[in-house]
Image (cartoon, rainbow, N blue to C red; front, side, top):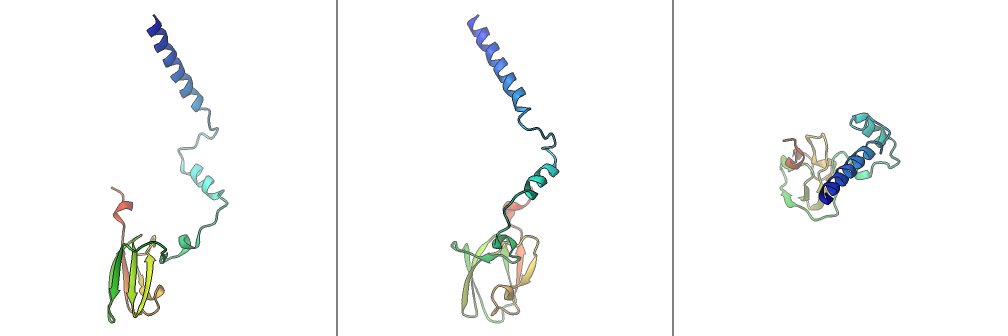
Length: 130
């Protein structure tokens, strides 16, 4: 009898907990995208300079790899969100290619001495759908 009462008490507690969580939020549209957008639009924080940079940003972390571009080079490939140490025309820069929506751009946008070299970006496989 004691075990039956324990089971009944457990079932009742679970039922009350489940019913109580349904009243936790008055907005019934939580599953809809407009609910999320409303929270984002109400956010008081402004985007950072790195988030607004169209070609990425100078990195403070170690580079994933180092690329030395010879004079007369025409292009090189990079994966989006990859951090590289670029050696071009006697200059070095560590750069993170955070370029959402950009497929290619002139490297001279980052390193003025790299005139005529194009950066081609491929998607990072960690961020592609399956």
